[in-house]
Image 1: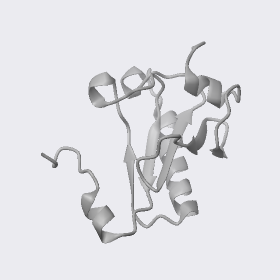
Image 2 (image 1 turned 45 degrees about the vertical axis):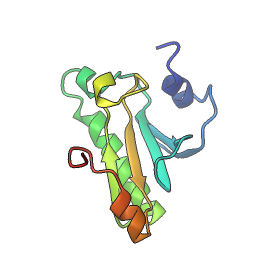
Image 3 (image 1 turned 60 degrees about the horizontal axis):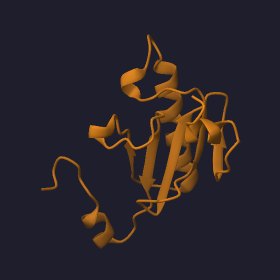
Length: 121
């Protein structure tokens, strides 16, 4: 997709703080972090969202999740969240599949204040 910011980042046409790259995905720091560690992991291929995965594309999801697992270990995270937002109603802002890796909370009050979607009222 020509005007997709994440496609431009994946092609290195737009700068980003890359912390991981392989043949399928790239990972970079979120410019508006919601946690002490907030990394976005995206496929290099343009896929709008999980809802738009064609056929048997488990390879893409597997690559995203294993990259997150490896990055969490590299960051020394003992606990973390992995979040996919799907569609506008699900909170997806950029129409390119991406996985949020969130972690790094260390203070009890920060952990207690952490949002718990579906449980918070």
